[in-house]
Length: 285
Length: 149
Image (cartoon, rainbow over all chains, first blue to last red; front, side, top):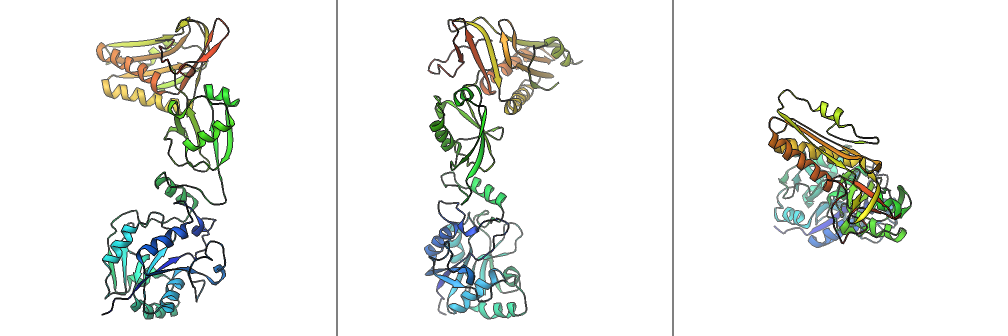
C-alpha cells in the first residue's frame, strides 16, 4: 500500500477560558507557542497547517500561517481534525495541540517511527491515566469516515473516539512530553520547569515582584522594600535592573538570593507575585 | 522553647538553660557571643544586628536539627539578638544538653559556626571616630574575624 503523506495540524482554536489569555500566544521558548509548535510540526511533516475557527482567521497570532478552518465550529478540537481530514483526504495528520510546552521533536519522531498504517490512528498513552492522547497523534485517512459518523451522532470527544476505534497505542518515551497547560498556575509551574535559558513572559502582563532590602542594601536603596513591575526573567536579571536604580556596590558573586523566604538560585525563573531578597554577606554571632 | 529564635531585648541564658533540662543529660555546654570593644584595629562603640527573620528562623532551625542528628545530643537551642547592642552585651547564646560532654561541646561549636556562615543576620559596627560599617560587606576584599566569638 502507498504510505499516506504526513501533514501537520496544530490546534489553536480553543477559547483558553481558564488561562484568561490566548494559549496560542503564550511564550515558553522565546516565541509564541503556536509558532513554536508549528515549527516543530514542520520539522517532521511534509506540510503543516494551523487549525482555526472561522472567526480566528485574521487574528494577529494566526493570520500568518497556512490555515484549515473549522467546518463545524463550536464542537472543540474534533472540528479541526475532521476539517483537516476532509480538506486533504489522502493525507495522514499529525495532530498537535499548541499547549504542550514540554513536547520534543524526539517524542514526535518516535510516534512517526512507530506509526501503524493499518490502524485508524497511532497515539500515545497518557502518562497520567493510560488513555489515548488524541492531540499528539497521527490520524490516518481511514479515520475520516468513522470520525464524521461519530460527530454526526452528536459526540465530540476525540479521546473517546480513539478509545473505541482501532488505535495503535504507544508508551511515551518522555513522561512529561504531553503535560499540557490550561491555567495560569500551570503556566507558571511549566515555565519554572523549563530550562532557565528559555525566556519566560506572560504576554501583555509584566510580572510584579516585591523586593525586600536588608542591611547595606537597605541603606543604599534608601528603603526596606519596593514593589516593581519588571520584565526580568530571573533574580540575576532583576538585580542588574535594580543596580540601574540604586547605588549597589556589591556584585552578584557576593550575594545570595531568596525567593519567597527560601534560599534560591540566580537563574530560577521569577514568577508574578514573588518576593525577592538579595542577601549580602552575613555576619551573625 | 523554639530551637532557634531572635530577641529584641537582652538575652537571658538562665531561662534558656532551664529549658534544656533533661533527666538523661549528664551535662550542658553553652556558648555566649559578647560584643567586644574592637574589631580589626578599630575601636567599636556599639553594634546593630539586623536579620531577615522569615528565612533566618528556618535556616537556624535547620542548623540546630543538623547538630542534634549529627552529634546525638538531647536538646539544643540558639537565641540571637537583634537591634542595638552595647559593649559587653550578649549577641548570641547557644546551649546543648547531652549524655556526655564531648558531643555537647561539639554540637555547640557546630551550631555557632554554622549560624555565623549561613543565617541571614547582619552586623553594623559603630566606631569611636563616628564611622560605621556593615561587617563583611564594605571591606569584602579583606575577610576578617568577627566581633564576637
